[in-house]
Structure formats: structure tokens, C-alpha cells
Amino acid sequence: MKLPLDLQFFAEVEDKQPDVENEKTETTEQNEESKRNDNEKLYTQDELEQAIKSRMDRETKKREKEIAEAEKLAKMNEAEKQKYEFEKLQEENERLKAEQNRWTLGKEATVMLSEHQIQATDDILNFVVGKDAEETSERVKAFAKLVEDTSNALVQDKLKGNAPVRQKSSQPLTRDDIMKVKDPSERIKLIQENSHLFK
Image 1 (spheres, one colour):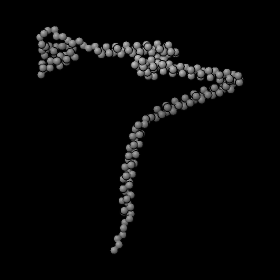
Image 2 (image 1 turned 180 degrees about the horizontal axis):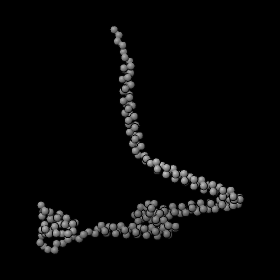
Image 3 (image 1 turned 120 degrees about the horizontal axis):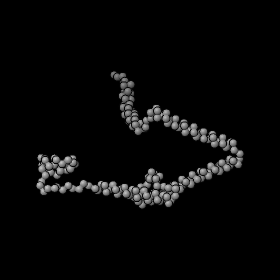
Image 4 (image 1 turned 90 degrees about the horizontal axis):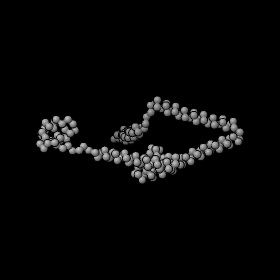
């Protein structure tokens, strides 16, 4: 006797097992994606509009400057154009020299600051780098002295302590004597030193 086989029944069982694994994988991927999205900064509509407006303003100013430059060049004859281009190159050259000088002085200032055990940050370098090596050296020395004086003052302030209070009489303190002390920190100190009176 032959029995009919329900192949569809077996096929569905096989299909359901991979679905469980796929669901786990999808859930894991969704969790990872939500974690990544949590790390991203979200912008409000106003912030986004402000950023776009700012970018558009910068681009508009850049275009206006380029148009003005082109109009200026269009009005010049060949000799004036060459002179104008030469002046622009001189200005660019001066700017690059100043940047190179500042970078070199910054390196020297970093070395001088490290000799005084001061780590050179951008803010410190902006403060100490001058227009030449002599001015930079003077500024570094003044800054190092300022740091040293300030740190010494802080150390001295920390080392200062309240001098121990001496008892005026040789008689032991009583609980009432301690409670009559007006300074709260001194009173607490005396209570701790004479805890046997407060049991």
C-alpha cells in the first residue's frame, strides 16, 4: 500500500529554518546600523538651512570677486595686465615668506619652550612667536618666567597650611570647651582629636 507524501510540508519546514537565521542576521545588521546612526550628528532644520545659507554666501562672494577681477583685467591694456599680475605675484610671495618665517620661528620657539619643560601648543605659539627671532626669544623667556612664577606661587600656596593650634592651658579640653569653638573646621578637628569625649 502506497501512502501519499506531502512534499510541500517538508519543503516548508526546510524553508523556515533558514528564515530564522536570516532574521537573526537582519536584526544584527539593523542593530549595527542603528549604532552607527547614533554616532552621527543630527542637524535641525534651522542648522541645515544656516549651513546652506553660509555656503551660498561664501560662493557668491567668491564669484563676485572673480567677476570683479575679470572686469578689472578686461579694462587694462597688455602692459597694465603684466604690471598687475607682477604685483599679485609679489604679494603672494611676501605672504608665503611671512608664513615660512612664522613656521621657522615656531620651530625655534618650540625648542626654547621645551628647554623650560613647557609643551608648545598652537595657542602658546601664537602668543610667543614674534616678527623676528629676537622678539620671539624675548617672548619665550617672558612666558617661561610667567609660567615658573605662577607654578611656584601655586606650590607655595599649597604648602601653606594652618599652623597647629597650641592649647593655652595645660588642662585637658572638655566637651563644652570644644563646642564653644566658633570656627567650624577647628571645632571638627578638635572633635576628631578628642573623639573619646563624644562617645
